[in-house]
Length: 270
Image 1 (cartoon, rainbow, N blue to C red):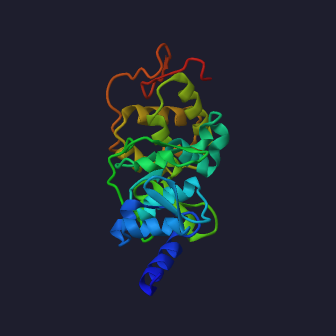
Image 2: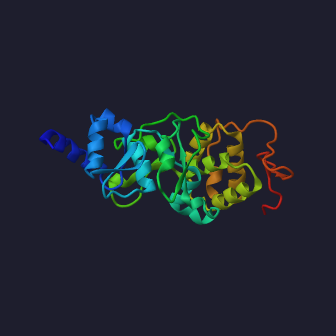
Image 3: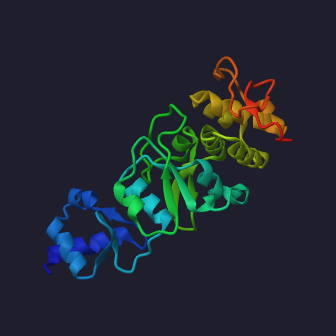
């Protein structure tokens, strides 16, 4: 192998590290031709866990490495949120059995097809843009914590290394994302159990998320459950500019209508 190609290979292996993946699209964009990649695979430098994506030989295929590769490498505004966003922040014991292994992702762009074909124990669930009208931001290493905070997002470090950081929803955003997906009584019970644990939400951030949330159902359910658990932060949430819609919302047929937020909850919730 010539010095130039050897240098390209060394740079690629250094970029990949232990858990990062790269797509065929990324490789072409960075000057690695299909024939050169095929040589790397044939020589045992790269392996392909699914068609169209590569990992260094000896690298570890992990769900967080997949997400980090999409965010930082592929520059996709795709974040971990909703149910699994709360799992990352220590609330997995409130979730239904089996859901702790489903990584819930949100963003304006659908993930590449190879993501669902990876041989992982966990599975990914892409839930679309979510219930917010906030603009997408690029999740590069240079994006500041304050920019992310304005979106209800934050860096979550999987271990002590900076390269292990993922962008995920803060609890305030994740709870609203979860409430947006509630469609039956069983999911109301789950949201209620999670809301009970939300004792330290930040009122100003809750207000920001409510103002930018376009799901009337999510906002009413979130507020009704927060009131039910008498969270101290609720009275400090600025509700100016928060649109809660008109009329009643029949979330649970035959349920009990919440007197303040006009949404039906299961009659046996108490």
